[in-house]
Image (cartoon, rainbow, N blue to C red; front, side):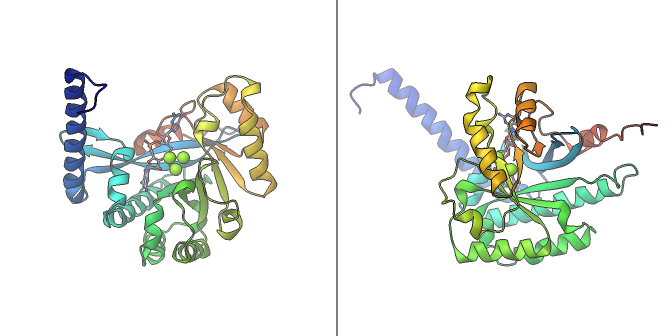
Length: 282
Ligand code: C2E
Ligand code: MG
Ligand code: MG
Ligand code: MG
């Protein structure tokens, strides 16, 4: 027993530790059956154009509606899914579901002419799922989705350089889908990856945006966005929570904005309500 901890406190920590382990085992166990039980759902977070504030895209974010634990956020089960091959099955479910929803939207009167994109998160591990690009192509064909309306997001910190990963990214890029580097600025990957990999878009991590209250706290955001733009990337800012941050990002030329200031991730039907076309200006 460690010296500094009194008996009671040690008991407290050990109880907490126990609960953590228990909920982890539970998640690991229940996860495998959650697809067939139809417990996953995609929420969608709007992205707006920084100049016009028009809705120009949505990011699909998975949630798990657990029968007893309630809505489980992805940070609590994606890492567990990533430790096994289950992430491949789950990732394919997400891709199919997002494309299916997109087709529904594309077929709605008033939405069909809107030039919006849908972003889907991929785990780096899924790049080793050998048939993934064929599966993606099947989804695009099945749901009649133009490839350039789909964006795939990969987090910078999870990308390791490997030929397998590079090969898969090139294959998907060749289909015409866009690739975005997520959480940009937080990874440890070497900058040379930006040239090696076929990324089109850099998503500036929310940690560089959401805490800014004054101009003089914005130097990192300014440096990162100017760096991204000078390399020719389109940018998306995550974590826009205030009008100050919105205006700042717009001024810095960040193309699209996403964050609680506009909307949290919401169910598909609520997106449709936001998407009511504006009356034409005479
Ligand atoms: P991410 O892809 O970077 O997604 C952005 C996260 O930031 C989301 O958390 C979103 O709800 C949150 N967020 C959005 N706007 C704001 C804001 O203004 N302020 C703050 N503080 N947070 C904001 P969420 O939905 O909990 O997702 C967490 C992460 O889980 C995602 O980060 C992504 O890496 C992963 N994830 C989500 N869905 C999927 C999925 O379908 N597949 C995979 N592989 N990963 C997923
Ligand atoms: Mg993302
Ligand atoms: Mg992110
Ligand atoms: Mg993240």
